[in-house]
Image 1: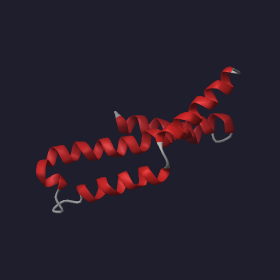
Image 2: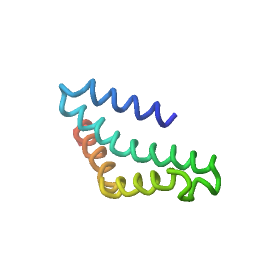
Image 3: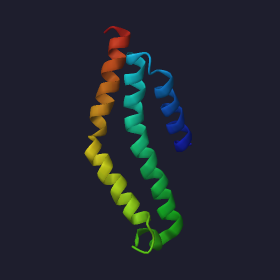
Image 4: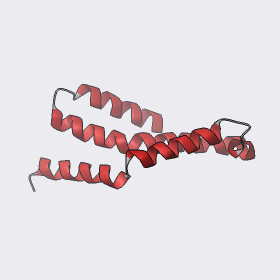
Length: 94
């Protein structure tokens, strides 16, 4: 489900590149959904591998740490959600 949601958001960004308002809206949603999707998929993979998933024997622990670091570097989700809210309010003309 998460991968499908991310794919739809990517295709939406591509489709709306000619309309800046729609593009910003879809891009903000993608910036929230993509890191969450990556962490959930990695978390499921770690759960499947059990204790080996968090050891250095597999690459999963390194991928999870790198994904979490990139999520922090991208900025807090609250900023992206604030952008979405601002765009929705502008669309509703409130």
